[in-house]
Length: 322
Image (cartoon, rainbow, N blue to C red; front, side):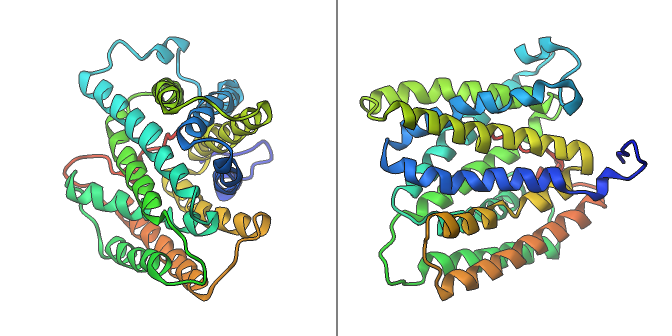
């Protein structure tokens, strides 16, 4: 338990995790206007290029995130082939496919509704851990999955006065990031900041040739700078703050508070993009909020008991999307 110089327990203060949730939630409404200016693949490339700038504060020693040696940023020599394969898969799934799906969804779907649909990531994380990795779940977690599915269904399939297209891309993004989270179980021996830097660099290097093949860049210098800023704040610095929160209050509590990021994104979209709020939107938001609470209640109880047959669960691993 961390203690500050006045003797107060920092573990009682979720400031870091709430800041991480706010910064990542902010990235969705901030991305929406940019989708009308440049193609999704170019936008994803700029976001992840900017994310490398956003992780620079993590190199500040008082943040407590640095590895024992800077040589670890070149991937330790003791890294196993399975860890290398998991890192590559994580870069492709979480750093290329997921952001492309998210940005594609934002091109034709309201950012507020898309933000709420990203709650499906928690549901997919649990289902993948159970079905593919043999994790055991309790009744609380199963109830959370059912509630979350109902909430996403209400939001996706309720008819509204406007015609929206692209909800499926948010589910694709949620699935890819959930798979990414499960892949991180194989990287627990590597410093999280090291994984973050490699994912940011690897994603940018993979996305850039895809962007070049998609067509010439059509944005202005202002668009480039704005995209870099969104990537630096929403994808880079938010992750540094997320990792700092883990060092302060632990993985489970950080994950619980970070679970509010989709709701923050939805609220900011309504506030700044003036997107409409329907009855189905409010109902689904309430159901999804309850689902997140139930899921994290189940994860908390699971964390107090022996883990499943495959070792670490996703709740025990820091999420490194950078």
